[in-house]
Image (cartoon, rainbow over all chains, first blue to last red; front, side, top):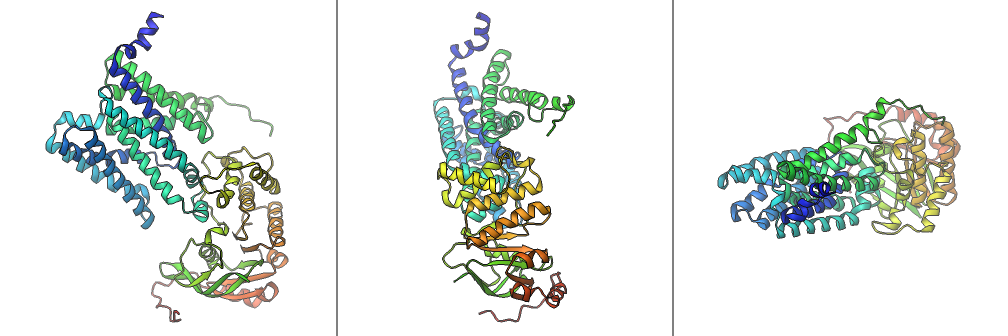
Length: 291
Length: 246
């Protein structure tokens, strides 16, 4: 019992920074994975990555103006992300370029710009903070920001649920009955940016995408319908957060990568044994049914 | 009273006309077949009617209705069949015009959905994900969604293509039922015998309107030959059309 307590609970009972990190990752686990599920179902799994790069110059400008200030960096990231999301969305609707191509152009420019700006004023440590974050250094304002973002994104997702699902499955039909597709699409891209900015504070721009996409990809192996997928994705993200923090505490590893690596391990497990499409089921021949 | 009126309507792509100078009206309650070779502009005309394509010239009048009140079955629906959604939910989406983004679906709506699924012979398939449906079952499902949409004007783009005889007959019975309910139905079709047997009115299109009127008068050997001679290709060196815009 003592051993179990020491391993699983004591780190959080004893240290406030561990508790904060846990609350922060749980909050991220409720906001980001549902967005990831929709990205995956729209075949936009890599868009999160592009977006994460896109917010870098905004955060960097915030950093340039105000140093490592939470609100300057988050605000800058949000503005840059929204501009690029909306810009790419508009270009995709008005020109023959597809959305992924429009975003690819934007995020590459954005990334180069961001790294340039950080290097003007900062040093390599700052750059590492940008790219990989520091979940153990989450303070109260950051926690409030993450919780606020999660709350907003759950509410917005509930509001745009119907047009968002319909736009994924039959966009032509949605256009033929409603104008809601465009606004829902823009709101969804805004949620992607918002959650990446939230994750950015804890996990950095590169790994924030991990807590969004890995649980989503995992969920595809465990559920057949979209509601089930979202439930699985949230659970997978929360488990990754909790186990990842423990691993990072006991093995003295950086916490952000530990969280994402645990999610990676869950992914490997799902890939092997998930009931919907896991590889084991391919290897075990099952007799087909009568009808 | 006409449900739709085309006034010197030209529709097309990159300034090239696919439907050229069409005039005429579709009366309320009409059952109109739109016939013509591939590339004749049938789908283009339908896209124009439902507002998916803006006219290059001329106009489409829809009376008091909006383009979005017209139910539309495209030739190639943009459906992502790998998306995890059940047949029941797909059919339920036909309620969009009535329910919008937030409206709840009540017991009465559920009855309508179940009745529509039964009418196309898919009872028992409600919980199947759409990826597991055959082509014919898919088309039956889309007809169920049209039933739920309950629109007064219905536009069907090649609804019986790649569909077996039994399914075509079942779906055609639904089209006749809509006609009996005084709905206006337009359908693009290739099966001349099917048109002659079921559609009182026909528009024969070959980019230019060849003939429009009672089916026996329109589908003569002479008219069909005329339609067949249409050249499909766009002419990149084409002059600006001389017919004056009003």
